[in-house]
Length: 374
Ligand SMILES: [Ca+2]
Image (cartoon, rainbow, N blue to C red):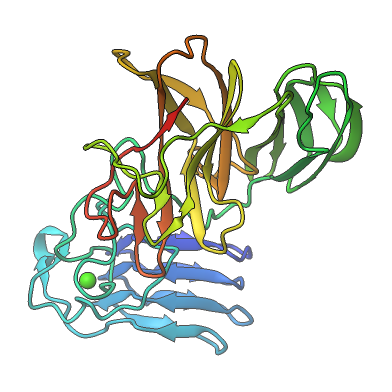
């Protein structure tokens, strides 16, 4: 028996997995473009990884121990930073493939943004660099890897629909003016409109609409790689920036700051008010960094006992939880006599680790980031 057979498909990602005592092979990969990252192969029969003639795979940060041929490769694959010497597992006999402190796998891997967490859901890297294999030695939960806001997944194995939707103009000073809504979608077969419009939509098109109040137009699409959603919000009325916290503001304890701790001139949490409507914005739409915004924000009037959720929308929902670069949502604040607070959660990849909900540049702990509106 073989652990995983890719058949003739390519572009699969296998990470943080343990292939133990498969009778013949751990992975049989005939296609091209497969990424086999940070796995642990022990006791597999003929080959741990069999790359079939004509296929190429990217094989990095894997442990091969007590196994047949580690990698049978006809040529053309990228094979690097793997370990074939004794990895000093905690207890191989009982199937515990965590690393002992003496393991040569520790800090011997290369940084792979596709693998921000390990098999236990702990953050990579711990120590100076990525470890080789499925477990990161000395790591603990954090970095967006566990808890209610679980890890962003930058590289889904199936490509979900990508939805681009724009409004021209993208804001209206008074109601009754028209906009043109344009959209195009890839990786999808069918789309449905909701919010300020409705009905089944083609995967590309444009239409003329006349919003009378601040309106969000959402398109939900389905394809072979799953579902996706895109939205655009058109503020109507004289909208002004109403975010009160700037980089110099004192932020209440227990919250992350609303700016980018690596570049404090960039505000990640902002708001546009058209009373009583407030458009909440989280993220940085112009950034070149890998930045994700969690799909839910919360608002509370100053002194209120609880937080009310606000759904945020962006160009593309990833792993059911994250929008790339920018997400925004609309809420209504009837009592404008007191300040309102809103919290959101953003994660940025630095090139070596995820920084999520930071309060300072060390970002050793993650919080909900807060902004004040009035
Ligand atoms: Ca490490």
